[in-house]
Length: 123
Length: 404
Image 1 (cartoon, each protein chain N blue to C red):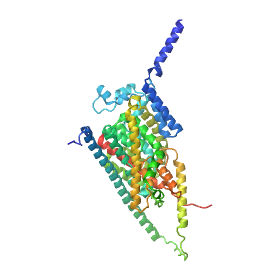
Image 2: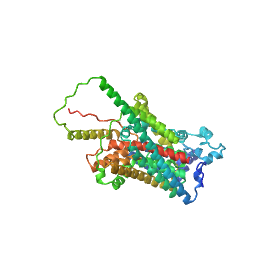
Image 3: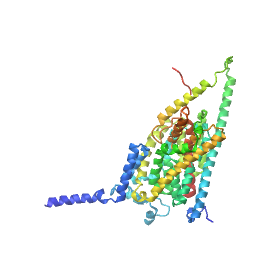
Image 4: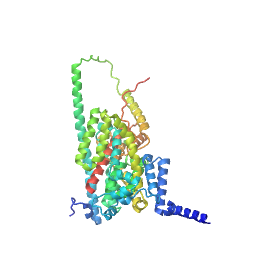
């Protein structure tokens, strides 16, 4: 039985069947650990995002409670739904993609801009 | 008559000192290989930022008689023969007394300095926002690392390589040059040249290698899926993220710390918003300088005796296998997500998990638009893409922890 803790432990595997065993073990263990590590990061992100958003939500609620906002009048008209909003999203996506493509063209280490198109104004 | 004789002897001496008379066929063949790389980099625009310095380093190292790099200084047997104690990784006395420019530049590779510095620059240029907005994309970044481990398996069982060599070959599938170099310099330094050339060549070939695999594994209906717009990520989340990832990954896999730590430091520079000068330096001057040093010194390791072997062809083949399996792994997990979410995830974003930022994400965007011109996947694909950078660094850390 090979000792994994020994220095240069992989040299203990010489025959084809031993190598097959080693390769299978390392492949399964290695790939599983990658998944586990990234899964832990997902959990951390979820917890972090949840905490940050709930904290910022509380702050917003506080702000709303302390400052009297003018009451919005309810519109009797049906809300203008979906079609325009959908088009705007699409337009925003097109503009984002176009700017990103132009800024990142060229090479591996090209800067990824990291921006967000928030509003589009017709002139 | 005397003058003529002296003249001829001078010419003869010059001839014997010239590279033409001192060289062997391997050196001339390697000079030819460097010319091919120049062609690929300059004419075909294959990762020119790296391939031009690599090719030039290769050219310089193979000039007969120039002695611009002494790879024997790093050979364990040579070091032992000189009476150094066990564990010495280079013949430092010889290096100081006889070493040249490239010998000293190569120290940055040998000691694992350049790849983490490149990661610092990449971190300063990367926005993890799309990944934070959709954390599930990290799983796609993990799935795409399957190529690394399958190529490792193939190299070990079928290729006849040692476990350390197999790991260095497998890491090509991560499509991340600095990570491949960082792993190979520790596990199989003699393969540094072929692995670096293969890794950077395949990164440049992402738009050629990936689309057929993506189309093969997906239906037109799946490729046409339009994904919901990502939520906005707050500044606070972006600042906390690099600190958390560094702590978690470093504690879990300490061998991944140099790469992940520097990647996250660069990103913290960027997101903190208080060190603009450092961000500018890391993402421009520093990364450019290190790219030159890394490229030239890695290229200089590609000398005939280590490069012109059957193993190099095997590495090239296994590298593309690793890359193809990585792409397939990402796409297949994307398909699974498509099924689980009831068709809300476009499987094409999975292929971006192989790292190669931002080219792999652009390929997802292009393929998505071919299936549905109203489809804009770029931002969605950036999530798995940057997750792939973290994933490949973790995979490298695991291989180093298990095999070094």
